[in-house]
Length: 234
Image (cartoon, rainbow, N blue to C red; front, side, top):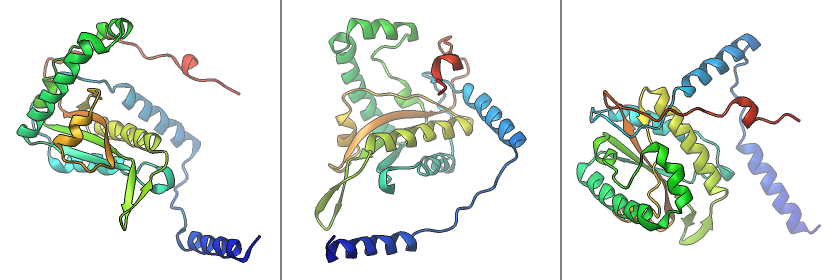
């Protein structure tokens, strides 16, 4: 091992120690843990993807708290490679809807396989996406593929995994706030970066309308897989 190697190890060790602090952790009894885990499951089991929204407004502060919650997600090397674009402007929502529907028309008329279309048939979906304009808010999630420091490009790590985790926490926070949402992927989604003037380092990951459900909103009568089908014990 060279002197340079030892110097690098020493620098890394000193940086690591300088950036650590004591964990703030409040232990719970097993009774509390069981109750909390069951209560949270019961809450999240009520979450549904909704396509029929009310135009009732939602305060911006609520939306900001939801996004702050998503921002607490773990990420590769703590790079936090995400941007959450919060859209309320009707003109921008109109642009997004028009571009999304143009892509979806192509998808439903030829891009999607017959099997894919059959799988979607029970949900009654088509290229028409009015919820983009009706919902009071749209969150467009972007993944940040790389950073630039001093003009030099540095790739981020585990970007899809990191943004996927953050998005899951975002959806849970939306439901916890008493709102509904829908995960929409009008693929390809390059138009979102163009409409929202995002930098080249960012790629659209997901489009999520957020708000209250329409008074007579309906959702497909589906069932979730039972525990025995989604768990394996070792």
